[in-house]
Length: 465
Image 1 (cartoon, rainbow, N blue to C red):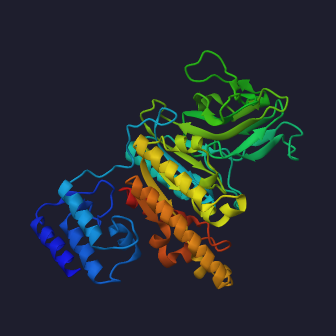
Image 2 (spheres, one colour; image 1 turned 120 degrees about the horizontal axis):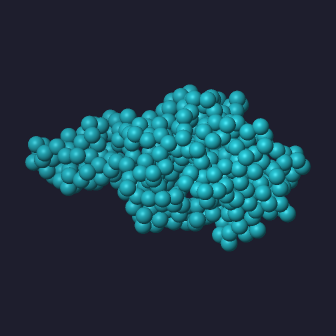
Image 3 (spheres, one colour; image 1 turned 120 degrees about the vertical axis):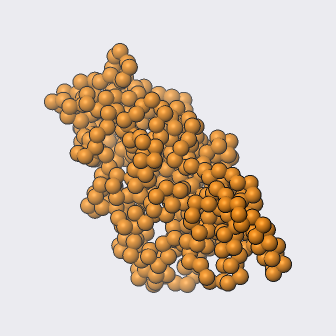
């Protein structure tokens, strides 16, 4: 060990006068000065020799190869990056076109990524909203992109750009008097949708105050034996059909398709909807129409960076189809916020560890094929050891949860490592602060301060303030 240390330090001395740019993956910048150089190597070696001399964040920051340990191999890799002098990845900029033909960032997540636990305006208080603002500021664009077509069930209910829609349509399915039902399907972004089977059923959305967007679009599900809909101005409740930007006539959107996938309408001018916009079902005969999400834009040239928030409560990576993962992995940057529900509840739905590994392998292949930048947001926090409601759990149950978390966390780390991406352990970053930042009722969903802390950790890892 001493011999390895002396060799690395000797090489470091030879390079002391050559400060280099950050490594290609953004890791290894131990002293957080935006450069990977010999001082980082010395600090890593110092910590390797003197165990316990660094905090959780420092350990994550200098664990270059992400194997959970800080050793001489990390120092060697940092030194190699210094010699290569490779440019740092900018996770906010991409020339890559996604599924929609745009430059974009995709967040694939569950209830935490959607914003559950944040109280108030999700665009301001959930971590995904904070990321959107930071990316928009870095790129000078104000494209809000995809957002789910519903609000959180948190109390008080938290809403995003639009409030909960007004539903009409008379008697519907599953006892829903408005003609709409909530449906789940692993073939769409993001699995949750609002589905109507009844002709003339409608959803009416209104833009919340404080937002100034010029364009909007609607995301919907296609599949065999699906129906059709139109987008209309809800003026006086009469529903005047509206026309896409650049189109000559109002359009009926046919959801019939041999393939189950998420599609979207063209763009509409927000100012054309005087009293909110309606999604009106045209066809009946038990033909479903499923609305998946909404998008709001100021730049529809395709050249601005758009942040798409593909999230829903209860989402599991193991339940998502190849089509969904291919769509998400076609973005310039993919932020993955899944794994908690897989680890805790996946077995109850028939999913196994092998299924999770299969989905990780598929994402690795897709992201590497597409050149997608990957950021893994790991919030598999096993905080039952510190929160009162979990202390009553027996040792056997805690050991089972620990074993699950070790496996699922190792797979998330592997995703980051094999795509040359970034891995952020929120549990390691938060430390004991998780007690105050997680909701007191369930110990899982972050309160507003927790969402801010999470956003800050991710932005720092991606090189943004």
